Image (cartoon, rainbow, N blue to C red; front, side, top):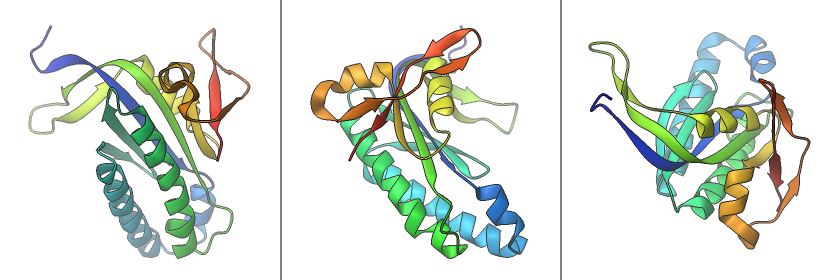
Length: 177
């Protein structure tokens, strides 16, 4: 195995804006770019303010992580991110319909410097990352079964319909409150 990669236990999150494409198409590209830049900066401040790390920007989505053991901080961060999207980029683009979905999961991932020569950046891969990406669709904060088990009764949740992908059912829960 390459020394550039290591197994780590992390809490991983994806945050994705709903209805962004529809909103962006009804605005000037420079206006969208300026609003998106402010959104990225806001998301980075929120994540780092809770002790996490913003890993990368993917269109209107962000991938972030927290060290294992930071489950409650990750949930607090996710709640703040969702609220900030409504008062931030949604308001800046004049959209009452735009919201943010945040998916959180935890577990062992492979972390390290990915990419090609001259273009390497820190990233994470693994099932916990994939589950967080699937859970972020829609609105609100959703967590994986693994994160729910790690949190115990410290955060109120309700079960949702499992996500069905690649021949498996992935249990997810909506964070209440």
